[in-house]
Amino acid sequence: MSGPLSLPQNIVPTDPEQSADEMENQIKSPDPRPGAPPEYSSHFAPGPPGSAVPPPAGHPGGLPVGYYSPHQPTTFPLYMQTGGSYPIQYQPGKYPAPQHSAPIVWMPMPTVMPNCPPGLEYLAQLDNIHVLQHFEPLEMITGFETHNTYDIKNNLGQMVYFVTEDTDDYTRNAYRTLRPFVLRVTGCMGREIMTMQRPFRCTCCCFCCPSTRQELEVQCPPGVTIGFVAEHWNLCRAVYSIQNEKKEDMMGVLGPCSTYGCGSDSVFEVISLDGVSSIGSITRKWNGVLSAMSDADHFEIHFPLDLDVTMKAMIFGACFLIDFMYFESSPPQRSSTHN
Figure 1: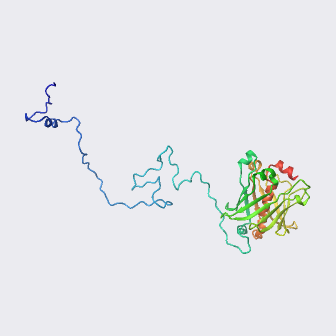
Figure 2: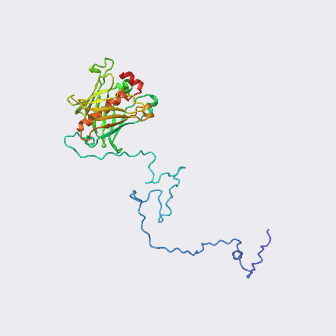
């Protein structure tokens, strides 16, 4: 049996018959803990509810993730971890999305013009255009010929047309610069405005034979022929004639004696039939190392502002036949084909 219960000296029983439970309640705890929180004095005075915070510009409803306001103290901050180990890195409306390319700026759509093929109203307002071929790294590394694509722009850098080659892999890689092709010219709405067709012409015969001369047919709208670009045999330089839909000569194109253009531009002059007047030009711009190592070319086409719009389209089409014949492959391959 345990000894008699010893009481602290500061507890003096007043009633010998007091129960043990009553005596234990009188024992003071060395670490007293209140049973209810104390009534803290606060200077906060609740006021009327504030108005809702308007969303930032560009966000139609509510605050997007990453925005917080004085009325929303519990909203998560901008760089909060969201279920993973990567923070939010792009604030909405401030930085572009990492995988989005720069937007394409198109030339304003002109009004419909009488006696003008649909889609050529753009050319009626221009006196020069730029033909920019897309650079293909795979083609340069492997030698595998891919289909050509071009951006057609004005002097302000606005897109006018988009041109895509429509050929199969075998034709491109078997026939190379001599391959037949179809080029499809589309506008800002994705509608095909113009079609250019080049038939296959064998070059194993004599160059002076008409059946070996290269030719390009231009249709606008697709299915309606507006003219041809025909090659003429010449021992020294490139010579073409621009013809109407009846194959009647309308203008001529006279190229330089050397089309290699290493270190300088190659200018193809558009002249009148008598060879006296200069009408315009097709210039292949020298782009330094890019021009020497690849066939991603840059052409600049000039023509009078008041020139008939169909003739502008024919000069535009002549640019592509010149590109495929002289600037589509390396200089040694071109010299073996056209010398």
